[in-house]
Image 1: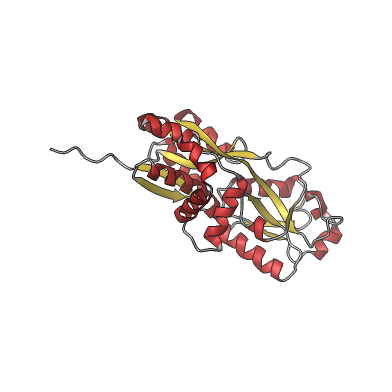
Image 2: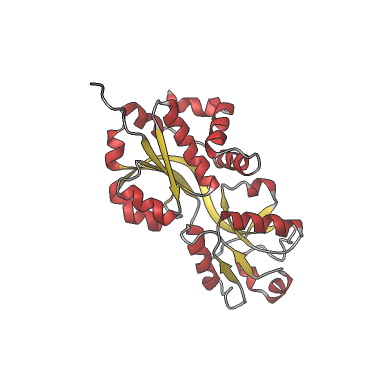
Length: 271
């Protein structure tokens, strides 16, 4: 009687392209180590509980200590941080570069009447309700008094933000957008982050690979060691994100292409 094949490693990721490509690097590493991989994805509020319950073995990527702090606090006793995949993950609000910096440089500038009068809209198109960027964007409206100046924040998704930025820049309109790094839009458009004097947004985070404790302990030692060595950069994620959104690659193909083109960066993980 032959033994059954080992169960696939279940890898969770958030259903946004920049998160998808970061997780796809982990997926490709697992595949190169000989594992079968099952990928599950969804919004932030769904994925973290799945990890805590052990329905996910691994999860990439978690923005710590600030961006995903609320979710981390709910699960930290049941998970282990395997690797800081990349540093420099951050949130901000931005304006296009053609908006003069001497008129709009800080979030507080958005409350000035001469600035609000020049904007094409005072509705800021946001991403999903469960994103850390959304929570903080709603908070800064109050903290900076922007709500009293007529500004509002609309829940949407990553596609709504992309469409808004592309359309308004094409029209050379003045507008404000919530944004983050890594994100391919920063590479294809001139977008200037506004200074956050009050510190509503957290300092730049590390984006980490997490694992359910029990599941991680069951992985082969070699797999645990290799996963713990994965490191790449914000610019690498932006390049893979661009490959998905502009070149039409799926996340795994984008990750695979990046790893193949950067062997000096990926090879040490497997040493």
